[in-house]
Length: 465
Image 1 (cartoon, rainbow, N blue to C red):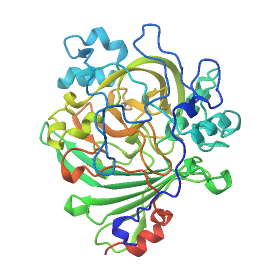
Image 2: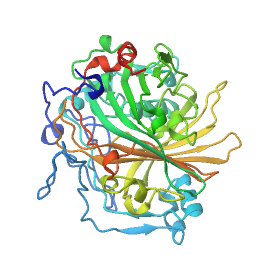
Image 3: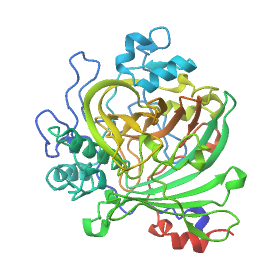
Image 4: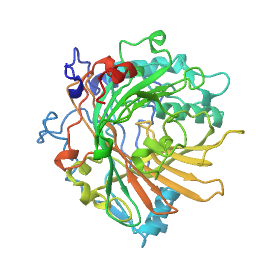
């Protein structure tokens, strides 16, 4: 096998897609979907009921996932309304403070479209979610320190809302264990825009994820506290070609801390890296964001106390396949990403607030997150510094990948890109995108890859020195 071709293997089996089988899974409770969100729409009719999610390419459309990124399945929708500086006060109650600040300062605007609840899960994941209701337990020393018992699905689909701090810890672990697939092989392209200038490529390459927590053949004993494994291979800019990173994420950060190893071009050896779970400035983001800001929040939650504020209807970016049709130059404006390529929808979101645990430190003294009830994925994060000033805004956009071949088949909607803006300097970074440019447009796939890719010993043996 050619190491530099990443060892992509054909899937050995395929599991049932969500849809009719998903609806037959054990109910979690009256009025809930099989994954814990409210099944009904809202009273105004602006949020529809969940009816199974997007599990196949819509009739009349075609898509070859081996050749292209998925098309915009909702391109024919008409915009409902636009929110900009002129009418911001009318819609402020539906927007996070960071998004409002971005609109005021940069001229950013949002285009709102009809809501589509596209999220779906394979049947084996829904069965695991149902089992997790009674088997997943937060660490007895505090939920920020991890959980046990959960496997193969959202660990806490029914939050314990009698205790806002317990529910908050459950909620952040639901985000960290959100369904993305078992294997995800995706384009990674990061651009930084500073001082109102042009986008500068800060990283490009490939991410290979193995979510061991979701492997249908996994057991709690074999899992050993490892949530996922990541291999990142850099292909640009030229000074980073040959850099590789292996990272193992954890569901028990104190018993089994996150671990990372890196090989840098020209150094000739693999090194253990500094912890990537906290506020270390991210090299891929040119320091505009920190490692623990990826995907709204990533890494270990041990530094914070997590408190559930409640649930509310919010305007959030959703179903954003249109981004795949934009070139990198088109998408990156001088002060913000180009709002013409973004789709916003009204969804119910859990509101989660994180404040530093006594004795802990992080440059983000407070974070407020808005988590989509269907995906359990953070859509918006606002952060404040130690002086209580609004600091960063993070948007996590998703895309639709229905009915893909892979291990297992991946239906519905998963994260697609991350935008982080320093609201005090107006610099911003986009972190994981695919664009229309040929060099940034390798189709994502969800095929099984060799387990040896995620071992630091393999990286050491095969790296180019």
